[in-house]
Image (cartoon, rainbow, N blue to C red):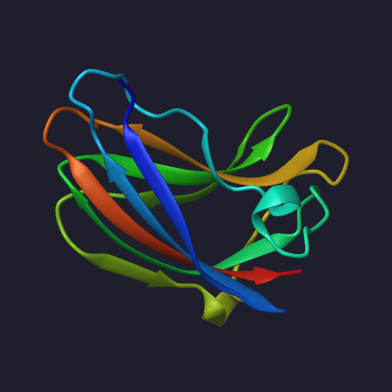
Length: 135
């Protein structure tokens, strides 16, 4: 078996998009590593350039008993975005700094937003809402 990761598109407007992410442990698999949540070339309609093309504006999350971090895929070294500690509801809004943009290299960045978990063991689950701006 594998962990359950369900990504539901809540909004896909001309300028912004929002996603609901549900993660649940299967009780046997290892943590998620670089699991793709958003891939601009296939997630959006119409598709976006697969290069860095989204900026994260808001994150809301509640992770029951595990931690996770988001990063942008970069062929040489992923570009860290945000750490989410488990145990309680939290929200992070980045509009005061213009959002958290994919800072990976235009040549090597894929534009994909990924999640990696720590401690996703039996009985653990969580929900994340991610709002992005299309650049």
